Amino acid sequence: MSLNKNSPEKDQNLPYPRYFIQSLEKDLKLLQAFDRDHPAMTLTELASALGQPKAGTQRIVRTLKDLGYLQMLPGKRYSLGVMALDLGHRFLTTLDLPALAE
Image (cartoon, rainbow, N blue to C red; front, side, top):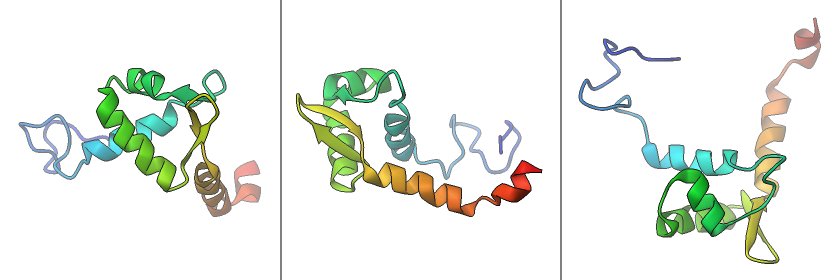
């Protein structure tokens, strides 16, 4: 759902709808930074990918690690954790695959 400038959901002075949580956006963007070409990254690489200071990125990383969405690998590198897989699995269980195949 996209909101246009005239939407009552959006404060005209803000770039986001008033209910938008920018910190959550950063958390999700951090998880989305991992891909086939970047399966593991250092804190510095994650901060660069987010365009955020290292200190703020470190807080996000520690929180996601404590929750199981990230795991720490040797060499102070991080990769997606088992809870990221769990989240993907939860999504898949909501799909009606036979209906999608039609």
